[in-house]
Image (tube, rainbow, N blue to C red):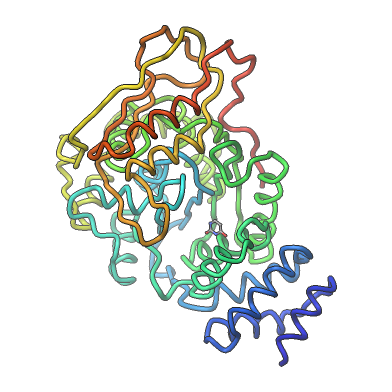
Length: 434
Ligand code: URA
């Protein structure tokens, strides 16, 4: 097969066959298609998009480019959640134990943070000893016995995506809905799950800045799920301000523990409960939504979900005593407070800038190879809509190195707008799609 012909066909808006796409992905994974040809193909997709038949063939080829987990030995409904990423999004840490406590099996394979968004693996690794690198056998055992496993991407799962994502990153082809949707869905479906719930973020701190783009991404992923016979639900949720109050790895683990105790911020608690409710529903386990929702809240308040979190921390080598005593987590040596420079209402918080400010402190990575500092970050002392008086704390900054401190303070000053009370604070959950 001459790959240049496939590039030309796509460039001219033609439709590639399943076999052509399969051969392209296979050959690229094996190193038989050079990056320059794949780059040209990806750019052609960027401009010409893909038909739904092409998209399911392309995703299927990526999904089968490596190992697909066989969860047939695990009893129960295997359901996962994927978030398209945001600032302060620590939902997975609460959701996985809560869903397991509610009877689901959650084989969760997560990623690391990049740029302004955080990653579940980095948050978990702030727990002393926690090992996100478990063998596939051990992962399946954890899912079977404890109801969840929390690991990182292995080299064997969807290797085509790993190569393609790295190439997209340097060829300006990341922001392309079919390529994003196939990337996410190939990795998630390789977990061997029965169903998937998506949290598609929209707003200043999200990949998708407009509702139309968020809806299109959600519908594209739901379509891929349908083509592969895997039910997929999506919630489109607000990411126009950080989720919860904390940004930074240890700080987010502490907030997750508080939420697992039923003492977390309302937005974080509500979103986590709604996502678990969707996971139960998509698995056919909900007859009365209100009763199920109340049951989930009860599992937070009575300590059941927190005890699942303790068990999984211990099983993955971590120090589970952080659940009773979160001060054992590594925290930065210094704190300083950014105070309100005038009285008024918080009318806007530019979430992406807040995420970048946390990254500048060392909570996130600018490049994949950067190290992160688990102890640094930000605590939002007031959120959108709150009334603040001049001199009142707006953000507490946890830092170890004061090199970037002035820059961070300046970024936060620009990110937070104090003015008139916002006319309408949008609801956290904007749309539910299936
Ligand atoms: N996340 C992914 O996993 N893939 C993309 O292409 C974008 C975000």
